[in-house]
Amino acid sequence: MHTIIPQENNPVLREKAKRIPLDEIRSKHIQTLIAEMKKLLAKEKYGVAIAACQIGEPLALFIVSGRALSEREKKGESDEEVSSQSDSSGQNEAKADQIYINPTLLKMSRDKKVMHEGCLSIRGFWGMVPRAQKATIRAYDEHGRLFTRGASGFLAHVFQHEMDHLEGILYTDKAKKLYEDSDENE
Image 1 (tube, one colour):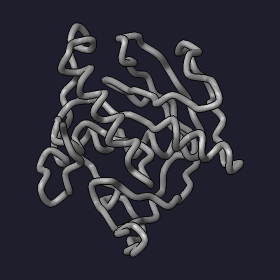
Image 2: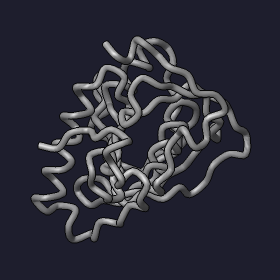
Image 3: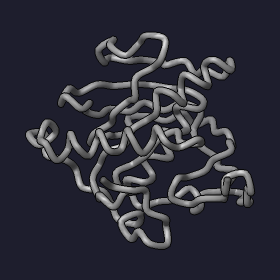
């Protein structure tokens, strides 16, 4: 079982991720990796998403937590999905985790917003990071199906954070302000 590796012990965080060959998406290795990443993400109180590089795998893969999106929706902080051409499964009360394999950012709005951001690889710190308010991404799901998803607000912010991971960029590289948070060390 993989674990989330802290920044100081994970040189993969600074590498550009490798694309996963399409014929390997359904392989035992990739499917096991996805299952392990989902389990790790589910254990994290503040976990919103996780990229493969955070567990030492330099692959173009990230997962957005359905639980985190559902919690934001319950608090009235939901983000509209601008467009979605994926299948409609997982649209019940609890959202399914969203799998993004070989993602590409297609468009981002010029309008930016500074938002509070953290990272499972950099514990105990948070930052204020400017990101585009809207983003559209194209990727493959865990079944090898290509889809396009657009988002605004929080989910657009998450897309950009995770896409940075796949380029070897950390939020601390872009943050306008960084600060410690003692609550994270619980």
